[in-house]
Image 1 (spheres, rainbow over the protein chains, first blue to last red):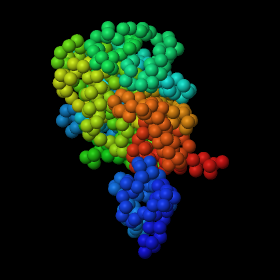
Image 2 (cartoon, each protein chain N blue to C red):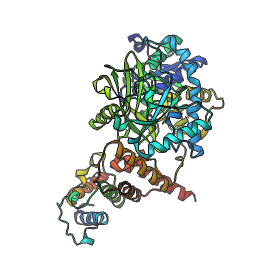
Image 3 (cartoon, chains in turn green, cyan):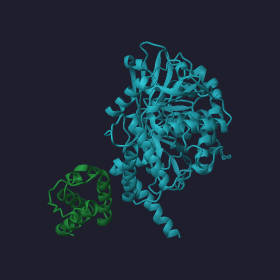
Image 4 (tube, chains in turn red, orange):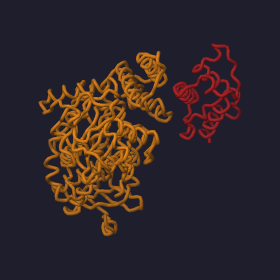
Length: 89
Length: 491
């Protein structure tokens, strides 16, 4: 997989929406919106982390298991891409 | 430990015990007494971050009773480990007293007072009642008394105790004094103590042949017993990743030893019932004007010796409020932090592991010190090929023991959080009722189970941890989901 960027972002967005149900409430999520200001809690973050790992078949490194990783669509996508490329490398 | 001991690190032993806490040292003593060949105990003499060096070492089992203690057969079997351990201690103390190096009796308090105050919420009340029921069931002595008559007990009026029970046969020992006495006795009886850590076990998934120390020195052994507390799981993994162990988590506890600066000293252990995720607030006289105030409990991702400011505040404030308001002027002479070995299901792990020659004893959570003499007898028997003296249910490669339903677990979690809510002095808006606070915790807990996607019901301490740690939640879920899919395949 060389340029999975588009699909990764789409899947990340979908998984975020499953947790936060932003689209259901008519919110438009920008790529750099702070999710913690959009209703993310420690428990939705937990669910998001688990669903991301399951969906992408990855294991996020321990250093990525912190709030800042799950700050925005951008930061999550970066973490997923990082894990995907190190899994292939 | 002397330089000589280090220089003479042996290359072979019949038994190497990894870990010099209470479990390791009592086992070594038992093996020496039985003449089971050469015994080497490996562990750093400073014992930093270990559970035993930070222990309050209450010789308590009924004082620890909760509503859970006798509710299921598994919990009752665990509880009776404590009851049977208790009977060993008079002989243990008689044996060790001559080796004491502290100049004080090893038994630092002969008895316990359990107080019921109002700040610990309903959880205190039900555990207090469970304790009295258990005492009656087992025919143990107790008497209700006026809390004002407890020597040293002098709480703030707003957290004063309304009931108190005297347990005349549950006291405490000086944990650090007992460890030193054991070391001294082991030196006399010829066990070798090596002031090092074990880096890894040697051998394969089939057989363990020895240990490698952190300086590269190798000790070959017929049997290796891992009794290294919260380090045990990772040490076992150095020989094989495939051993199906119950996961363990560090239960970080904080306590302090203070020198009394005035007022009547405590002459007994004075404690609350077990409460809010932890072991209850307690003071344990240490002798020479010293008092041990304990203890906090929070499950953490990795072994640590740090102390959270919140834990310092918790212990200092509640000791002053609930035990003795004059504690404010006491001098803290020692800060203790220890990592209890907490298993996923809360039960100890005692037994042989699949590689031959490898034995595990850990997972004793809050009462490893108290149970150590009894477990030493059991393990010595097993090492000799004789029948053990405790129930085989504690085998380390078991399925997690089930003691509750998910619904029960949620109720329990709510109850513990309410207890913590009121004890910490958290305030809700005046119109907010306790039922609404409970509802908040209930909703969170239900959501946590939904997110984790597991069908094994966790204890309140593990649930609290899983909700606050992404690493912990992932580890718990993976382990349990792995078992779910394995059992589905088996069907």
